[in-house]
Image (tube, rainbow, N blue to C red; front, side, top):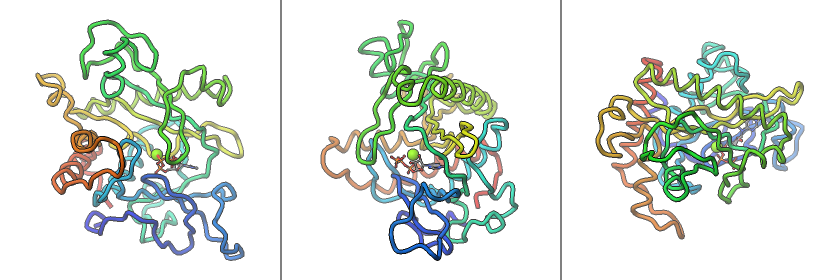
Length: 320
Ligand code: ATP
Ligand code: MG
């Protein structure tokens, strides 16, 4: 299976495709144009894009070494499952194993099998649409200082890991590669994308979060927070859900029973997500210079938790 393949952390050689862009975790490819010269291919000139999740892992906006074997396949499998659960929310998928039967039939090259999504190229909005249903992480830090999260006032007396009275939308500005994303107010998103789009991004984010939370809870899992990315369809302008969705990279997930019964923050927030990596890194790195290599047991634990989340949510969905 793809999980047994060696860690894929660098762009792949994919017949029929050319590498166009690498983010911290995903590599984007556009259809190879035999007429094109050796110049770097332009993502914006292509209507189709192959989004391939590597095994790279990032934390605090740094790509860490080594990768986590199987992670890219897990992220893509989970994203595809969630897109399938979210009927009615327009998404960027053109074809995938679920609709085409196999990766091959969907036009996905064998070397990227299990880790790729064939998508419409969208005009991405420079906004990370963060929704938080629970108080933790940077939100908890800010709350302790000012009883707010991203400037939004909250009731007094909340503890780390508590459920918020209502899910809140706390957008961030997508910083260019190498810079840190920056929390911004809703008003700032209006300046960036206009009032109508800003309102629609907030509405869609909150609606998707509510639907996903309910599905997660039915499976014994709490969706604490997540980040969506949307883009505009180039032909119709329709606001479309893109990138990865509701994965253990883009979200915090906790065990619902432990959250209820746990007595320590560690028990209540027993993460199915990257928190394991963040916690280890915080304890072993002062965020200057190059981050240290992740030890084997942290890699193993993270991979195991990513696998368990997929099993809990999607049941026996085969991992390619
Ligand atoms: P950055 O965007 O700064 O590189 P990142 O490190 O989070 O951030 P990745 O998630 O690794 O990047 O890469 C995925 C990239 O692909 C993101 O820039 C995302 O906005 C972009 N993307 C996802 N889906 C689409 C799409 N359908 N059309 C165009 N771009 C897309
Ligand atoms: Mg990303």
